[in-house]
Length: 257
Ligand code: COA
Image (tube, rainbow, N blue to C red; front, side, top):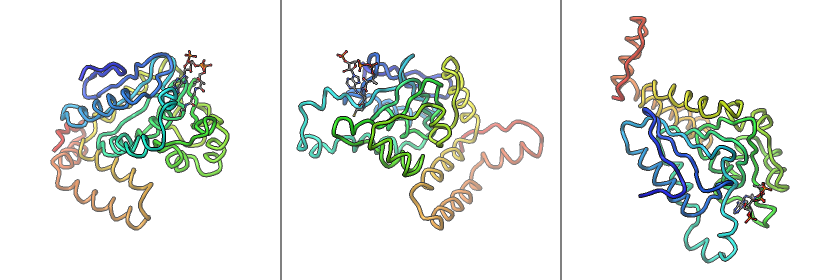
């Protein structure tokens, strides 16, 4: 597919998607379709070990394209199960996805960032779920993911008033893994992605699965899942290589098997 709303690049073993749909990057249906396809292609490409999503130079994404909502009604949304496919596409991706967020990450933009496994925020980043101001609510996971990330009280206030978190507030609340100067966002995010590509790919996948399940499973089930995945990694050649390299005091050469 020739993309109109995103720019897709491969940098080493990192797949990079930059949203490129205009100044505020409104999340149109077309943009979401393109994004799902790009993620799917990276997911199935064995040479890609980590995925990164950026906005443009000023803004991550100002949310769903409100203008598309004007003529849509309940029947359209419900019959098409709008945002169902998108929600699942992100959840099903087994490779780590990092969002590098600058400027506005509002509504669907905030939900897109939270659908990723980690968020690196530039100092200019602002996170919010302002759907209430349109008489709406999130539909791409905002009320669930934000609440799990920052707790009920802060999430409730944001959702009920449309108030935003600055990058620093998002950091303090646990929504982002760290805040960096705007000028360093791309380099810092790519450095993190590259660091992940140096690890054993099967262990990376297993860890992603275990941590994401931690939000859903009772502790006893989560502990069992973790233990079984830990056991499974003993069947990998990369575990033998990692342990051998440690003992021989050298850098491991992981092969993904
Ligand atoms: N969807 C569609 N168009 C959008 C949009 C969105 N999510 N966000 C902004 N725009 C459009 C505006 O309508 C405006 O269009 P115009 O130039 O044709 O008038 C243009 O982008 C610039 O927006 P403007 O509000 O003038 O810019 P700003 O810099 O003053 O404010 C925002 C930027 C993002 C804070 C503000 O536009 C906003 O609050 N947008 C809505 C965010 C939102 O509710 N997202 C969740 C949607 S469910």
